Image 1: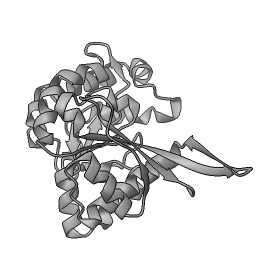
Image 2: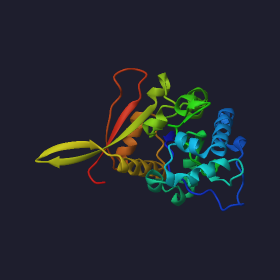
Image 3: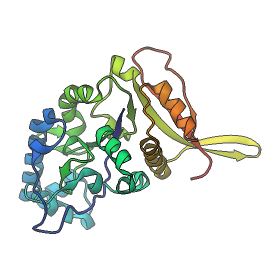
Image 4: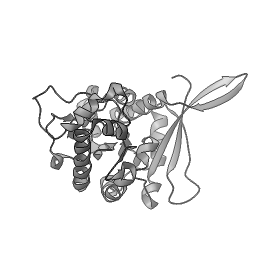
Length: 268
């Protein structure tokens, strides 16, 4: 199973100044992305070093986040930590990688893939520095990163997925960078989180945002800790129900389409 995750906007500080191993692009997973990573890294560092105002505009940073620009200028020499420790926020708090037992942690390192505007995609054990560059950024030279990454990911991701299940939990901005097609799409399941409320005796459902992330984090954690190993979307549906989730979904009506699963929650 390959689980596709979004990154977090906020990120942990890599390490104290002067400590830690510096970035080595060749040490990252999915080596087919190395050239594309080098191109994005080079333009991002040069942009941030040359013109702070322009960098803030391109990266969409408020005045209070100007410190992120200086962070980006030092990416090549900054200390690194495993990506699973760099990414923070609601989804990653609920996932709780640091508190997984050894077996679940090994499963996480094999199956979790975090999409990134800077790296394309990384595994949670890959050593990266803290950075600021979302998939929605449009760099002056390379253009929109969601579009830029498609070519490289089109080759790298099917290889990473192999012949197993793909659980796609990415947000819309990161889903633009790669979309499973054909037989690969048929082995893919996306998840939407809906809150169910009863109003005047009638059930009403609504899409949740903040708690969508928390639910997805808990869902992935439960799959990892249970040792569940679904190989198809239908098996995933059964596994999630066995774990206590209220899940709805069925095979798509047309070939070459991903399964769309709804996880229904009553409490957030």
